[in-house]
Every structure is written in C-alpha cells, then in structure tokens.
Length: 380
Image (cartoon, rainbow, N blue to C red; front, side):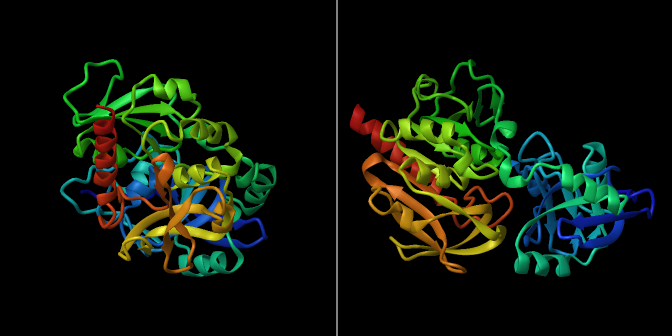
C-alpha cells in the first residue's frame, strides 16, 4: 500500500480539564473535539475499538506505541460509524501492510471526520489517568480553543449516550449478516431478541454461528414490543455511559425478567443489577483492554477477557435481591458476573465476542443457546 499518512506536520494539542497541555502532531480530520479521556491497553484491534459504541463520548488513548501497521479493512467494523469523539496515539503507521488492508488509520479518521492526535508521550498520559482518574479533555489546534470547548461541553457523566447509539429501527441478523426483520426466517434453532444499548456486530455473528437469528430492537422498546417477536431468549447488549441514568431501560429489563432466559453483556450486566434492585459505581479509570483475568466462582476456572467499561456493580447492593455474584476480576476483585437463577437471568461484565481480544469466553454464547433450548423443551 502506498504511503498515505497525514499531509502535514501541523501541531495539534491535547488539553485536559485540569489545565495540562500536551503538544503533538495532527492526525485524521481537522477541528476540535471533546470527550472523556480514557485509555485502552490492547496491542491490536484498533479498528474494532474505533467502531465500538461503548466508546461514545470518549477520546480513546491507545497505549501500544505503533497503531495502524495492518491498516483498515472492510471486515472488522463493529458498527456503522466511528464511535469515540477522538483518538490519541504515540505513532500512526503511514504504510500499513496486510492483504486485507484498504486504507490507513489516518484515511479512515479523515474520511469520517474524526479529530485525532499523534506524537504524544502516551505512557505519561496513561500514568496520569491511572493516578488522577479519567477526565474531560479536548484535541484541538489551539489550546485556548480546547479549554473553551471543554468549558462549554456537557460532562460525560451527565449524558445518555445509549439513546444516540441504539438502532433507530428493528432489524434481523442471521448467518448471511444483516437482514430485514420481516424477511422469511431461515431454519434457525432459536429466535433471540437483542435490546440494543450499543451493540457490536461480532456479538450477532457469534450467535448466528451458534444457530440463532437475532432480532435487534431499539433500547427504548417496551416489554410488549420485545415479547411480540416471540423470543426464545433475550440479550442485553453492551453500551456506553452511566447505567443508573437509564431508568426507562431498567424498567423494561425488570418487566422482562422471568419471561424468557436472559443474558447480559457489559452494560447489560449493570442493567440486570439495577433491575433486581442493585446499584453501580464509577471506576477510577475503568477496565479497557484485552488481558483482564476473571475467575468463575462456580467452576473455579480463570479466563483472560476483553473489557471496556467505566462502571462496576456494587456487590453489597445485591444482598437480598436474589442475585448471586458468580465472577470476580482478579486484578481488583470487582464484580464480573451475576446470576438470578430463579428468573433464568445471568450476565457478565466483559466481552465474550472478543473483537478484539482472546476467545476464552466464547463458550458463554453456546451456554446461553443451550439454556434457550432447555427452556423451549420444557414448554413443548
């Protein structure tokens, strides 16, 4: 692939709400952007990260020093748009090399109008975030412009991002990919309804591979709308933002509990917690990366997981709710999974679809498919 990096060496700046200024070089589109500055420690998967709806409203710093060496391809998008408000990297590769590559990271960012920056000491910024916690920031061509933008911006914790990233209309997903929801169904094993709070395509691909046709509905759907699709199971998807702000969605989840087997992923785990009467809290700098060790308290098995979240379940809030903590993060002992056995509901805090990340957690897809099959057999 021909060299196609940024067309200039123009200066660009990252400014943080505490007054810190970092000088770098322009990457992607021009302009100014604001968001909560977070870091991801994954060595690969930048395309999936850039299209993960859970990063809505955030400026993502990638800690691996060289980003873009295998380029951008047409297969690894996890949604239909760039989701973070900005990107920070140490160095963006100008000459990607991979047989699937069609463009560079710079080209993708420029085409999609995403403001980014390179040439910064990303290690120093990461250490600052780990010490002080996540903060609002801006990527800009002039520091004064950036600070003004931060001052005018709505704080990350004061926004409801789920309603901006959820699908606007129902659609189906099968073996061949996205389908019209009204098209005749192929002979799938199960009909899965997904409440889309910020869904990644690979979740749908994994369920399709396990024999499910997924019906994806807006997060604003009612209990009656969900049940009208005659689901064999219900999935609560990942998504961005503070789950405690999503009371209408929580009410829907509460109304669906016990009607069908239910499985939650990431934000879905937090929504299930709230639905049974628990609560969540914000982590200092979140879990974002592909190497988080998680222990299953039921089986004793430890898996390496892919994670992307800034909030966690308060285990003490689950006392008396009927929910049981089933998994813990071995780094900080935060809750990584719960189940409400009597209501056929379970959830995990990490991403079993692993896009990007290890495949250790893929069995959770087949486990849930088997649970749907057992439920159908009881009804038969």
